[in-house]
Amino acid sequence: MIPQDSFIVIAEVEPSRLDALRSLLKTMTIAGYTGMADPANPLVRFGDYENIHFARFVVLADNTLNDRNDYPQLERSTRELPTYLCFMVDCDGDADALLARMAQAPEGLRKIFGHCKDLNESADMLGWLRKRCVRPMASYVNWVGRSVTQVKEEASLHRLLRDALPQICSTDPQNVFSVLKSQVKPRSLTPAPPTPLMSRIRNLVHVSPPFLAALVAVLCFIFLPLVSLIVTALLCAGALAFVVKLRHHEQTDPLVCQPYEPSHVDELRRGEDHDVTNQYTAMGSIKPGLFRLWTEIAILLGINWVARHIFTRGSLARIGTIHFAHWVFLDRCQRGFFCSNYDGGHEAYMDDFINKAGFGLNLSFSSFIGYPTTNWLLRRGAWLEQDFKRFQRHHQIPTDVWYKAYPGLTARDLARNSRIRNGFEKAAMSDDEIRRWLAEI
Image (cartoon, rainbow, N blue to C red; front, side):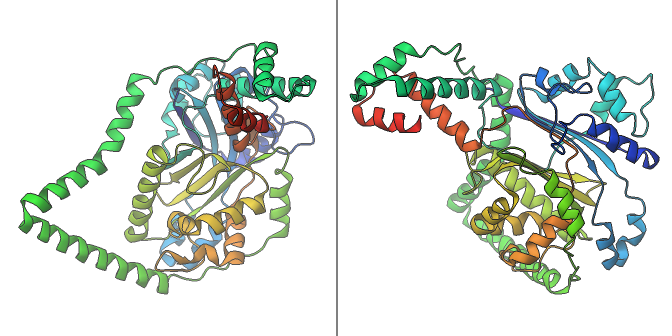
């Protein structure tokens, strides 16, 4: 399979050129569809790159800087926080190779990033972009290995089968299956390529440390009981200290008002529901102090691990509507932003998280200023529904340009089309299997 990758370019915008940048980005979108990229726009022709799933340009203009005023220790640094331009792409294969390919036609990128600091006419575009690439602290891919090519081929197969099925008069499952296989001739169904060796090695290296730590703990417990007792005592003491410190922060953190801003929400809504899939970008400041920062880092490292090795087949916990998601730190970990591509409307997306993974929201975002007060980290917080919804809308920012390679298809559609393809490629199935397969069509 081809693993998915991403690149995230973060460049500081010249304050005097911010309005001109926003105006330029609007020229990349489809008229009447706020923020929706034209695949053939003259600046970056996303449609020419067959391995791009999603892409976005978003001006990271922090709507929440005033919230930092409730923390006196942040007042001085607030004045130094810039506005950034983020260019993000989720793709198949090596993201750096894609970035190099896109930089071979640099005119559009140079025109866009010309509104940012330190880019001059003679600068090497690829080198300049690479210097500003950042790695997310955590990333999620809905179905690791499902390529853009596979998505499009399987969608085409589904359409062909759906159109051919009403023309068949027979009610015998075996006959229907046989006729469909003989009549429907998809132009191509590319076999999944083998996973690249380096990708396997990187995954093995990434998955190994927790297992090695567990193995060492088991060996110590079996062969070195004294050592295991000491380690257990230290871990218990550390956990107790963490819980006490956490509860202290929960009870003493300032309560920051998260207003409902009708004009801001209206602006956000203008960029939503142009497709069955939507974009989401939100940013804010991390609460001051090493405790909150290192708690956030540890949690995101854990999320990244489980997203990479456990939740790789269609759902994040019980949520199956997210295609890609990323958690990113900015400004030496003073601020961060979260972005995702999800199916359905915004309210349904939020309700899905609150009802199915509210604890995950608390873990991911309770270290950010203004998050609803948690109780022992796993209670309250996101379950204070209206407080949380005001928090996330207050932190959300409009995505200026957003591209999706397969409009009209949800994550569930992609999974269904893969099942249809798997059935189509089988030499034979039982009557019940055929009936279930036909129901998918």
